[in-house]
Amino acid sequence: DIQMTQSPSTLSASVGDRVTITCRASQSISSWLAWYQQKAGRAPKLLIYKASNLQSGVPSRFSGSGSGTEFTLTISRLQPDDFATYYCQQYNSYSQTFGQGTKVEIK
Amino acid sequence: EVQLVESGGGLVQPGRSLRLSCAASGFIFDDYAMHWVRQAPGKGLEWVSGISWSSGSIGYADSVKGRFTISRDNAKHSLYLQMNSLRAEDTALYYCAKDQSSYGSGSYFDYWGQGTRVTVSS
Image (cartoon, rainbow over all chains, first blue to last red; front, side, top):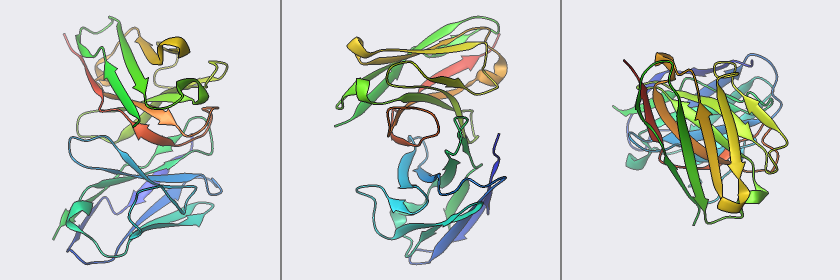
């Protein structure tokens, strides 16, 4: 199975900060990568698909980039609603796998 | 509005069985593949199983292969997960998730239900 590794595991930031989360794949997955946001007690929500495509209704402060084995999720100006856990997911193979998550906390 | 409502979770002893259901509405159910994704308490997300629109393509995580069976009834707009030989490590919140495509093999999930909790304990 393809392993996905996110960094950092936890990130402390302030409202208005620019935040970047990294996701690395154990082998090339082309651009077959999605990002999700999960708030406590809630289901995950799709933010980005195919590495850089913004899902309908998602604010433009979210952006994704990368290809091959290294990907990033960037929040340009962190808002109070953005404090949550973020997961990357590869879908290069049927056994789609998730990263372990990055928790974005209030500094 | 897309809605996915899971049911069937509960407390079950190790070695026993449980059947989860997911009722879908708000989209053309038989146009899309569907999946089960689980989340153990305090842990991350784990894809469990997926099924194509026609049930012709099915996949399982290695951790559940041979014990879990996914199925769907397009006439009833429903997805199922039959879980046999349950283990303590199967304890999790089980989410039903809609695929963005028909095929199920290697895809992402654009809508999720709120989950049904399964606890395996004696």
